[in-house]
Length: 300
Image (tube, rainbow, N blue to C red):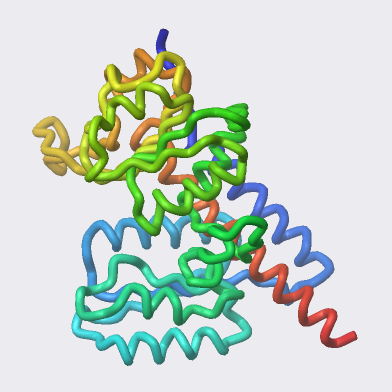
């Protein structure tokens, strides 16, 4: 058995093209409809800058206005919160994203909590996360990577009802929110982490494995149940002398061994990464749509 690769790049491209068409169609009757995203970056970490460039490029392709505001690493938490407050009150901005991680002297919780709920297109605010965690809760926005994972599973025809799903990693960005979404899809969910003993015993029983731990090639093919669906969220750079940069990107799953056991698997790169950006753009368009509908109702 050789697993089918889940092509996140192709699926994300279709989503971006659909969003662009959706925007252009609405602008035919409502020319003021201009979805807008503001990205705030503190410092210039190379990986953060790479992610920001991807978002800017994808937004442009989707016909979404995207403004990048850069702050030096020395920026205080108070200064950053002040800027977030200003864009919260700017009606021309429909989405606000603070590129994580922020420097250690700035509280990530304070920053993500400061973004207005209706502009929290990253889905990391306490209200959106809280509603996601609560049974029957209806968050305005889902976190982009977990949302992208669910779309990949749906597009790949994976029926989650009653399936055993194992999430490896419990971060607020991926592990915890994806566990809520899988549970809401009626999967039986186990969350494993660095303190889990006998990790492979859990993954060997899983029909679906989602891995987000930041350890290159950590999950081996022999740890998987034959026919499992594997979603690799990892992004790790390892030395590679054959590359001009001297390194290459790999996931948290040992792809070469896993592809011989799984039924479907996401590659790295080209799997979850493009979907994260596509879901961000989807959230921005949804936010803009909600704003214009509220304004229309207010005027009438």
